[in-house]
Every structure is written in C-alpha cells, then in structure tokens.
Length: 337
Image (cartoon, rainbow, N blue to C red; front, side, top):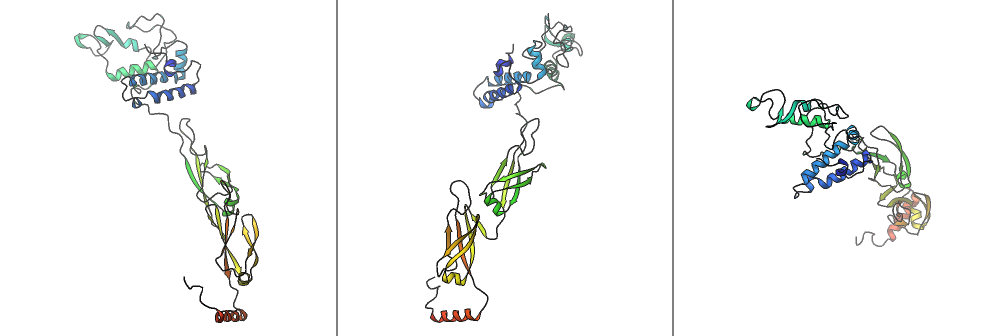
C-alpha cells in the first residue's frame, strides 16, 4: 500500500500549493537517481515522490484524497467493495474519479490465470480476454489516476523540471559625457515597449551595465520574467577624455602666457577654475588637479590639464622677435633627444 503522499513529500496537510511545490523540488534533487548512482532503491523512492506530488499538485485529486474518496495511489475507495468481481463499482464518493472509472472493473478481472479482459478476443483455452496489452494497461492507470488522453508519463521517466523562466534582454543607450560624469536621468524605451526614466549614477563609465529586474521577456506558465540589461555607451566630449576615474584635458594657452606665466581659466566637471602658469611654461606641460576627475567607489579621480601653446596670427613684431631669439639661441631643444 502506498504511503501517505503528505508524509512522502514531508509537508503538513495544511500546506499550501507553493509549500508543497517547494518541498517536492527540494526532495527531488536529493532523491534523484543521478544524485544517488550507488543506491539501488533510489529509483523507487524517486518514483514514490513523483507519484505523491502528482496527486497533491492536482487540486481536484487533493480534495478527493483529503475527503477520503481516493487512496494514496489515486484509486477510488468504494463502500462495501469486495474485489474485482466483474460488476460495476457501487455508487459512492469515488464513482466519478477519472474518465474510465465506471468501466475499469467491468473490462478486466482477476481469474485463475491472472489478469484477464472480461470481453473481446478469446485467450488460451477459450477463456475470454487474456493479459491486456501494455498500451491498455497504461490506459487503465490513466483512468485510475484521472489522466486524460491515454498513456501519461511513467513515474520512472525523468522529470523534465519546471518550464523555463523568461529570457533576459540587452539594450545599449548613448549617454552624453557630462551626463555620465555628473549623473543624470535619461528616458529609455525597453524592447517590450515600456518607457521608463533610468537614473544614471555620477561617474558612470563607457561599457557600464545596469540590471533592471523583471523587465525582460515574460516566462511561460507563470515562471518569473527575465531581466533587462542596459549597456551605457558614453559619447565623446570635445575637450574631456576619461581614463578610468581620471580625466585628461588639453588647454590652449597664448604665447605670452607661456613666456610670462600668469593665471588662466580651465574648465572642470564642476565649472571653471583658475590655473597658475609659471613663467616659461613649455607646450605639453601637464598640471594635476586633485579630486576633479570622475566619482565612483572610494576617492574621486583627478583632472590632468596639458597646456598647448597656440601662436597668434602672423605679425612683423613677432617675426622680428623670433629672429632675435634665433640669433641668440644656443643649441636646439632636440639635442640629446
């Protein structure tokens, strides 16, 4: 006799459908034959667990079992039933269990030679019936367990598991450099057609991935929806260039500023600041502004400002000055290079 399905799965009779499902999945992983290759009885325990879940996962069968109308194998319990007598089962609460419930016991019976069909082609010795074909046997099981459509899955067939969850989706959006550096909100349209405002954190870098839970494709048969992944493509800036958390900037300066030195204004992410140039600053010299780079984990990066001397339009005075310099210059800046 089959054990109580509640005991097999390990739940109380008051357990909800979700609790039963969770307990079944947990136990199925532990009892699966593949996980117990050296246990000869693992297949039997796994089959027993599948049969118990098949009964309790069917709401109608579960109600019939709880009312005592069917047993742990899903078979009807008839009042006054005395065996396979060849007659129709007596009326009772289980009389309507399964599509073949009223014909199962009329069509087959136990005799001296075993399991026989009550009618149809004669068997050995002129006796009616004979052992039923295998397909008919599974039809019997289908009727007794309430399965429609003939042969169902054998309890010894592998469990294919739950239906798959929804697929993840990926989309790429372009974000202006300053929006990514300072932080901003940008409206996006998901592949599903849904529109939402995406918050872009300050210091977001090119290639950063953001996960939107439950915004992917829906799952089948109630399974969870997939996620959406947003890839950030930071657009280039005409002046700033990111290198990790640091930023580099080329700053044009005039020839007189390079020669005489002085204060020049330089742009940063937070606005302009004054940069002090020493006299005789060469083109290509780099100044470091601490903490003026990109935000992120830990300390922010730095801003590296490289000055580039821009010559003015041609003038007689400047050309004369250059000739004097050439006459007085000793050596070349390329000496030793």
